[in-house]
Length: 221
Ligand SMILES: *Cc1c(COP(=O)(O)O)cnc(C)c1O
Image 1 (spheres, protein in one colour):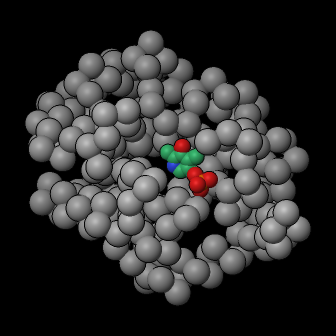
Image 2 (cartoon, protein in one colour):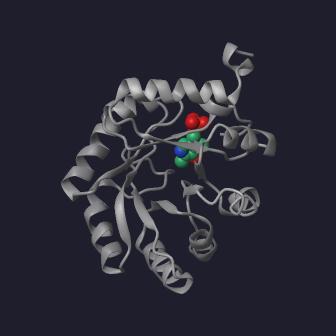
Image 3 (tube, protein in one colour):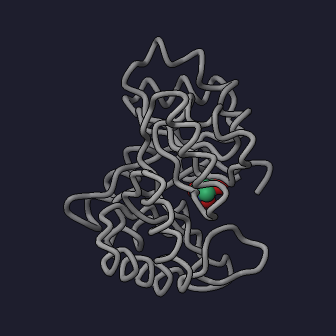
């Protein structure tokens, strides 16, 4: 057990928000990543006023959030994990931002689902900045093509998202994502997690996705 294990979620959140404000002005939005968290932790962070959340699995997110929607009409839910095309419609009904567009087939499915459901959600394209074979996201050189494709389908692509390789310094990946967004004229940058949110803020992140620094260590990666 480390010292931070004994801190409340509210105290940890305050510390994260303070670090973000020190790192950049305006500070990036804090997206609290609630995957695997028990109800008690969700209620605890909602009580602090946190309203922007990230989940990486559609069904898990539905179980956790669909009932809380009516109690918290100002919730903003971000899908931050890979999306299968057959779950596009559920995702479009549940989430407010889709951060993980990474292939043309998914652009097709999302466009169709948004049309059917009658919700046009902001979308981010996930970029595999480290070009890791096991990781989702388009390679940097494929970005322009997917962006054009998604726009042709009518999707509102507002920015980019990345998850840098775990075994490399994150800074160069954040710099690359910021450069790609600038070149493409995109304003939203979802980058930075528990280990590097302050670094990401200094590289111009607009949204940091933070889990364990708020809730304590998780049981699964
Ligand atoms: C789990 C997860 C996070 C948060 O990770 P922490 O290191 O716990 O902050 C951020 N982004 C994505 C895509 C995740 O799956």
